Picture 1: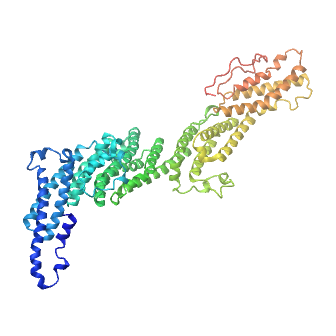
Picture 2: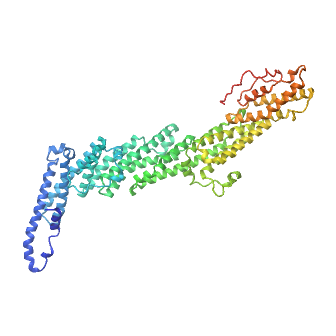
Picture 3: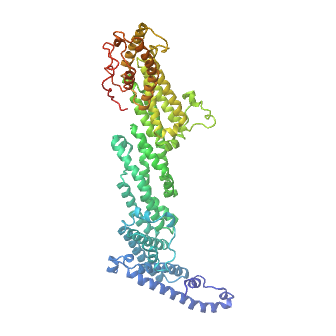
Amino acid sequence: MPRKGMRSICFHPKTPSFSTSPRSSPSRASLSTPRRSFSESIMEQTIEAASNVIMKWNPETSTFARVTSLFYENKREAMQFLKCVTDLQKAMHLLVSDGSSHGRIVRAQNLMQIAMKRLQKEFYQILSTNRAYLDPESVSARSSRASTRSSISDYDDEGFADDEIRAAGDSISEVEQVSSIAMADLRSIAECMISSGYAKECVNVYKIIRKSIIDEGIYRLGVERMSPSQINKMDWAALDLRIKNWLEAVKISLRTLFNGERILCDHVFSISDSIRESCFSEISREGANLLFGFPELVAKTKKSPMEKMFRVLDMYTAISENWVEIESIFSFESTSTVRSQALNSLVRLSDSVLTMLTDFESSIQKDSSKTPVPGGDVHPLTFHSINYLTILGDYGSILSDIISDWPPLAKSSLPKSYFDSPESDDTPAPPISVRFAWLILVLLCKLDGKAKHYKDVSLSYLFLANNLQYVISKVQTSNLQYLLGEEWITKHEAKVRQFAANYERLAWGQVFASLPENTSASISPEEARESLKRFNSSFEAAYRKQSSCIVSDPKLRDEVKVSIARKLTPVYREFYGKVMVTVEGKRNIRIFVRYAPEDLETYLSNLFFGTIDMGISSSSPSTPSSSTSSHRPRSRLSS
């Protein structure tokens, strides 16, 4: 008889035709007995059938059952076992509703307990023996959480699990196939035990085994429970190594460990949302809080080497870029503490970045070195500061998110020229651009103060040109160019040219002035000799002084040389030609004409390498042809 018809008889013994009048009572009594006997007969058959299957696999009475796995030995018989349990559960409900004898109910209950112990054992064995195949990486590789919500709702198809696997065909690997079979078996057992009222026994086994896998996975990834005092006692090298391990752990744990466990939990307990949530929460919450709590400890540490900024930004990036996945995996209300911990770490890391940027600005302003850099070269403060900012520029998008939440810089703290752009009122600069521009401005102001330590004013301008050019070159070859913009670069390139022009005017002005203003005018031999003496003296003094100067940037070095040569060489060449005609045939001409135009070009080409050319000397004049240095001064800086 169909099961639906049986339920109709058992649950609705009184039909309208049997409840008309008191006179019908004898008839109703006479009909009730055979109907009840038929129902009891069906229940007895159901219990007997269940008993035959269940007792076969009772480990208390069968050595075979004690040492053999039902699901491993015979999958079809395992499905039959589950169906018998389901039928037994239905029969027990009917027995209670019909008021059957206590003995029959007790027998059914004893069979159910034996069956539940068997299923609990099978559940444990599948979880234990398939650890390698049910590891989160394997699970996450073959499944998605979207596809695990379907459940096995009807065990009448005894070959369902086998058919499910066969349907996958040869498209999955052996590991994935074993994983799929194990997951299907676990879900079948879980649904059966939960439906039979034995959810607690099933869930306890699952939690114990799977939590150990999460805990072991977190430990293997190098994440350990640490106190703030332990973090503070570690030297930076050791802490840096732990941060690197953590960065890798976050990627792996979210991609496989927690994601795979969520997929498995959703699949096995798809029959009950509350059980799915409870299981996953208890299994993962402790490990996840440990993982996402580490950045907060690092952010609070008192260590503040410059490298810490980049590690803090790396950790912030790791959490923020995976935030959608974190919210998805830990979406349950009971795992809200994990989301809160990750969010708290983001806030702490953000505060740490602000503190370190403030400390960085303060370190620039507090730099107290007063010794001028030889040759007006780039100052170490410039090297360290702009290189630091260049690396920070690589974190531009993350810093934009962080800085957007900070109070904006007061306009009073910025130079008025920063807001002179016609676009500044309509389209104000992004906070990240303002912050970087301000930090560079702080550096340039500090360098302006250091330039005053040079006794030679011309060298102070060369110093400013060198340092600003280094800043610009670093900006142009990094992400800072996008943060600061072309307008900023153009404006500061103009300042470099202005500094270079001031250097040239102060360092070489007397040399330019020593030559006649009108080189085409006639000149007497005496005037020629006096002009030559003035030029020789001023050029030798300037060259001797400027030969120790350094311009590290090749482009700037060539621009300064070309600018000096254009103002000096053509004028001297024309003057030289007129002098040679005027004093031609005069005795001692070599005493006054020390340099041919080609000699000047050679000397100028040797400038700004920081090596003094000893070949020039007013006390030992040379002929125009011999005055050229026999070798190019070797620079201690690359050109």
